[in-house]
Each structure stands twice: as structure tokens, then as C-alpha cells.
Length: 372
Image 1 (spheres, rainbow, N blue to C red):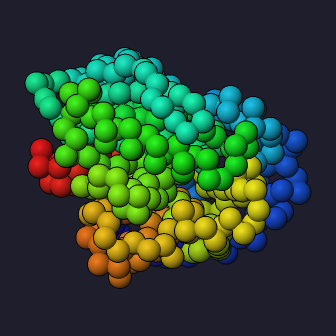
Image 2: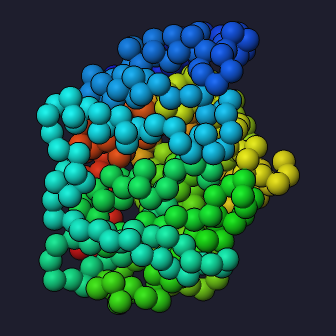
Image 3: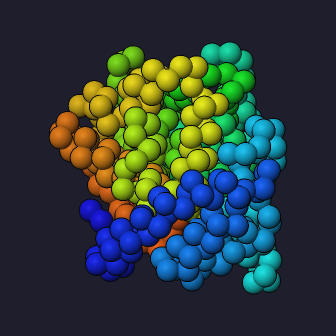
């Protein structure tokens, strides 16, 4: 299922921009300052946002630009982890609007606490979101984005918190180990260990161990699907649903139509993804591993899957390719493709209408499978 604002513009505008973006990407690098996006790349990204982004999404992108982020693909890992995020931009917009930035005020009826859970190489930090009510609740294991290199549960608090609210479920957001300190597949090992722990300890969280789900955004969307596959093969209690928000579904080609059309987009562009993969992989052959190459993985037998995509995102076609692969494997799958928004939009529900709609849709799909 696809949601588009205008079918003709959703096809023609990216196609028209693709030629411009592809031809300017190389030139952009030539004039680039040491650690900043080049003026040319910025011009391309800003022109694309002006043409294609909804006004509330554009306000977030403008706030993000005002925070003066460095170009992640040009800096060290430690510098990249210290850069402003879209979550910071949302807070800036909220302050401009005279509103609170307190997550508990923005998403009432959900409490959170930080803890640790066992991992294969030591404790993993986690944040547990619990909706109001008596319970026991379904339990969703959630994985944040950030290319397996940057970000954490704090940066992705809004997405996980919104899922807890909309699905009326406990959400356990896990900080898996990041690269390059550990290479592929350490994060995938942590994700399966975290889900296994949740399946065995849901009752201690006031959760129902028979009503489990997996969810994640971006790199975490990949982890959610890959963990469902691993749980199936390991004989762990199967989740009833998988939510994958703009997931990485393949790394064999960074020349899909959406990669080309959004090569210089913000907040995620093609050079950033190349940088993430360079930090993640021990060998180029790892790109063929089916934990990364989900579209060629054995998908049969998975529970229902929901995929959420953004139009202004290099990963848009990854989502459509995964949808097709799941459907061809006999898996129930539904995908919503939101026009006018970018990668990372899902966590901007405090200020972006379509993010609220996407969280509501995700919650509806999860509740259907979880019997909630």
C-alpha cells in the first residue's frame, strides 16, 4: 500500500532531480571544505527540500541546518557521534513554537526508565517505555538507527516512545554495540540476544511473553527484520509482527532510483551511507551476508511485516524491494510511502503531521497483530 500526495510529481520530480544530483555530486566534493557539506551539495539538497518537502518537514530541516552540522562522511567517528541530530532540530522547532521539549509532556501516558540487559559481550543499555494502565502489555523490542555507527536510544527516544503510545505496548529500546569498535555482525548478535532476553523476561516488565513484536528505524529496521529471521531459525518465540521504518534492506547497490534521486538529500545522503558501511564491514564480501542483504534472505515463515518509507530518502527503494521480496515469500506485508518527508521523519511527530500519521499507522498495525 502506498500513500502519495501526487502520483505524477512523486515520479517526475525525483526523475528530474536525479540527473542534477548525480551530475553535481562529484563536483560538490571538489569544492568541499574539510569538514562541512559543500555549498553546491547544500544548494542541491535545499532545492530538493523546497520542491518536495512539506512545510512542517522543511521547518525541521531548516532548524537542522541552523545547528550547523558537519558532513559526517568527512569527519571521525567520535566527531560524527557529537553532531546535532534531527531530534535536536525538533527541539529547536518546539522552542520556536513556545512549546515544551519534555518527552513526557509530548507523549503523555508513557513513562520510561533506563536499565541494562544481558548481551553476548556484556550488558547492553536499554530504555523501557511503559504505557499507562494495568497490563500485562505486549512487548516490542526496538532498535535505533544511525548506520550501526552513530546515535543511540536517546536520539531515537521519540520514535520508540511514540510506538509505545500508539501500540499500547511496552517498548524495550536497546543500545547494541556500534562499529567500528566492533564490526559486523556484532550488532546483529546483540539484537538477537536482546530479543531472546525479552522473550524470556517479558513478565518481569509487566509484559505478556506470548505477545511480542520487533521494531526499528533505518539500520534498526534492518535489525528488526534480521532478528525475526534469526529468531525463526534459532527456535526462539516468534514475534507476532515486525515494524521496519525506512529499513536498510540491501547494500549491494547504492544506485537504486531513490539513491540517485536523493544522493545529496538531508539528513541522509549516499556519501553518508558509504561512510557507515566503511566503518561497519570487515570485508566487502559482508555486503552479501543475508543479514544485510535482506531482499535475498530466506523470508518465508516470518510474521506480518509493516514497512514505512519516506519519499525524500535514499532508502525508499530498499523498502519497496523488501516489500516485493516478502510478498514473493508468502509473508503478509503492508508498506506506506509518505510523500513530503525525509529520512528520520518518524521521530518528528511533535512537529510534523505525517510523522504523527505514520506513528498512528504503525500502532494500528501492531495492535492488530498483538491483539491489543
